Every structure is written in structure tokens, then in C-alpha cells.
Amino acid sequence: MANFGLQLFFVILSVFSLSHLCGAISSCNGPCHTLNDCQGQLICINGICEDDPNLGTHICSSGGGGSGSPPSSGKGCHPIGNLNCKGKSFPQFKCSPPVTSSTRAVLTNNDFSKGGSGGDPSECDGKFHHNSEPIVALSTGWYNGGSRCGKMIQITATNGRSVLAKVVDECDSVNGCDKEHAHLPPCQNNIVDGSDAVWHALGLDIDVGEEPVTWSDA
Image (cartoon, rainbow, N blue to C red; front, side, top):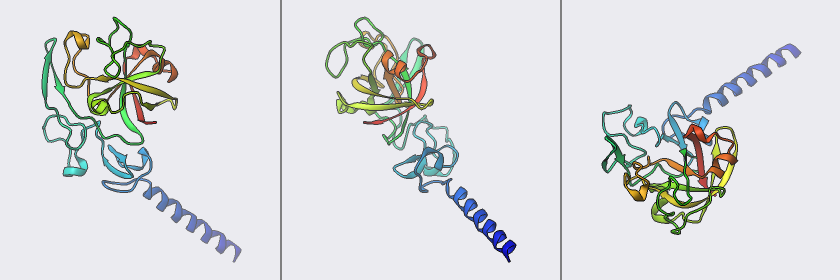
């Protein structure tokens, strides 16, 4: 009798574990709590598994993959045109992927000081800044006309380290290749352009140039 009870216990435990495991992976529009709760290339946005804005997938919206259309970054976020710069064509965006509690982005490095790679003074306050300050510029859509100027965001690297940084500038996703933008092409629409202090705080190598991160409003 004791052996039967023990066997029954393990059967119940196995069923519970299996159902829990199956429930951890959600498909389109399924419930989620973390990035790992969604299948394949889907991402958790506001508690629901949806297409990843950074990848421009259309798995949920059309039930398939790419369609040969211009790359998009989120529902309704498509290039408004292209800018020719240094012999290459760069897409122009007025929008960015939707902001969540863990927004995926690409961290780049910017010199906010006078004569640095940032070009003209920061958009928010018309001033240059020391790179020892934890500050960032955001892509046009996330900059949102300056609504985040002076506000703090939290940036988290894949190594688990986080830092709070102040928004002081726009990483222009529409214009570029002129003096104002240090003759650089338009930013991608998923950029967090951080000072040296941000990179150091996250324990990242500036020479790498680009690192995947997540961010949220602090």
C-alpha cells in the first residue's frame, strides 16, 4: 500500500511538472511574465506574447515570416524614406519599438563633450556634457519630441549589471550626414547612445561599439 501511494505521488508530481513546463511557453497573444515565456522570436509586451519589434517579425500579425516588404520595427513602425550618406542608403524612422518594462535596444557609445562625436550640443538643454556623467541619447521615437529630457532610464546589460542614466539628447533616426550630426548617418530606431560612464558602469568594452541591452523608464 505504501509503495502504491509513493508511485501515485510521483505520477502526480510528473503531471504537474509537465503542465507547468508546457505553460511556460506561450504562442501569439498568450500570457507571459518574462522574455523566456514566449515561443521562438516572440517577445513579452504588456503581459502578452507578440512579434519582436526589434526583429520586425510578423508571426502574430500575419501568421508567417517576412514578406519582402521594407524592414519594420514594431507594428505600424516602418521607414518613412531613405537617406543617402557616404555612398550608402540608410532607412529613416520617426518611430521606435514600443516601450515596455524591458525594452530591447542596442547600446552605442557617444562623446557628449565639445568637439566629440555627438556633433552639436545636446538637444535637451543646448549644452555639452562630460562623458563621466551617466547620460544617454535616445532614438527619435523613444526621445518622443523631448518628453524624456532630463528623466532617468534604467539600462541593463546581458551580464546582469544595470545603471541609471539621464536622457539629454536625441539620436536622430531621420536626419544625418551633416555638421549637426557630426557627418554620421541617421541612427537606427532602437538605439540607446550612452556616455563612457554608462559603458563603464555596465562593465562593457567600449571598443566593441555595440551591445544588446534592455531599458525602461526609471
